Amino acid sequence: MYWSGRFCNGVICGQSSLTSLAPLEAVLFDIDGTLCDSDPLHYYAFCEMLLEIGFNGGVPISEEFFIETVAGKHNDDIALVLFPGDLE
Image (cartoon, rainbow, N blue to C red; front, side, top):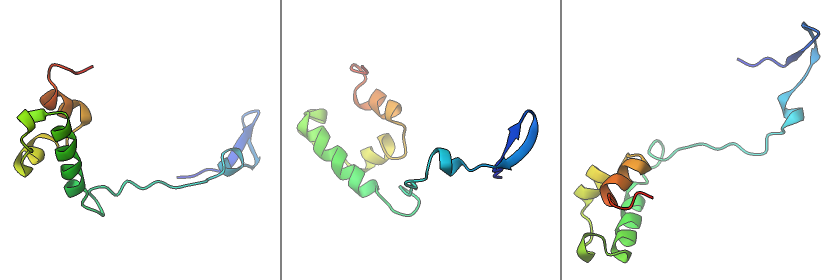
């Protein structure tokens, strides 16, 4: 629901537009997981990053590990599993 009027001393008067205060410059859609499947890219990125830091003794994580630990999880929950002693 959108209302473009304004109040003057408690009475609706004139027409006002939010775009005059803050013009629309862009629209952002979050399509990740809805219109595109980005999990393969995230899996690849996590594999590379975790290998670089020596996670799991330098053994690449499996797809199953990624799905159970990372996919669809919040960053804080992922960090708890991957870096339990280094949450800061």
